[in-house]
Length: 209
Image (cartoon, rainbow, N blue to C red; front, side, top):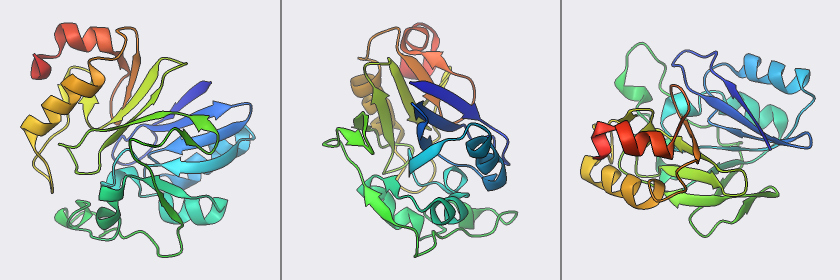
């Protein structure tokens, strides 16, 4: 499995391309749909689906264009459905400098949860990790030793908890029970900022001591 990171967007969201033999899942497409399409064309990728670690607006700005143009489903935790269509809950309505964002009704949405074992042929474990957002999930590819943590766990930090459905105690509890128990050499790909490892966060992240 190959992981490519794309950050050329307004809010420095880490958009990830998870690639196996030319087939691809996109995780958290930020605001730059054209840039994402350029990567797809350049690498000749067959995109099978787009997955959201959570439905805050900065992580799905490009979905209205990408999902319809690529004709692929959008995968999200069931608790994220209300956020997709409510600008105040997905946070886009709280900032005057951004247009309120609502997912276009033509976009096909499928739900994933902790019982999910594969997405479009990609074997994955889903951890529900609410606290930053009620729908927060992490995607763990056990064989490859990588986990995509969205805005739950960052290098030396954790997600903010002052948005709709946020709860700091819940977030820390979920991180400790579901992420920090992974093998120490697991690579952590967060929603913003640089990659890290479980071992590094156990040693140095003061928010989860």
